[in-house]
Image (tube, rainbow, N blue to C red; front, side):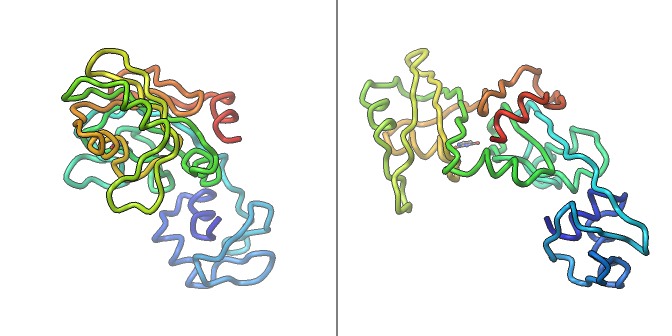
Length: 229
Ligand code: URA
């Protein structure tokens, strides 16, 4: 991880303060002063601030039930930031694993473990995300077949990965994706002439949303281990 991030994970410094002490030459890595905050370090390195060895805190893992009208970002923007709902220290360390649109609700994972989130978001890892989709027009059998084959979205060079569509009512379906392109669900239904009216993420890997809107909880060890493989 980056040296400034390591400092955030091992002290009470903010990212900006971490950069300042690094630039000031107060940080050593294995005995050498390092003044570039982007330097990659490993937790096993001997990293010290003014001669005192720093030990990184364990990584943190949460689920949040995102209500519509909030945004997946660290700072407030047009909509309030989802991370402020956690009411935790040092949310600047945390990142959202696979953003949802402001008007989408449902399961959002939050962590400071970059490798873990890569395993969830990388299309190569094929981690399944399940969305409950409400639609303007009734679904046809052909749509499931097209999603299973993969379809080319406007402006993209490669087709979508095969996606599972389970029709639960004429205008409602569960869609399972293993990738996360920009506005993917809305664009896939637009590509078959339909329109998404409501969108809610229910599951990521084996992690099922089991808390009410606006609530959050720590992930359990088995949930962390399963999706992080
Ligand atoms: N696909 C979308 O179109 N929007 C989301 O929020 C998530 C997936």
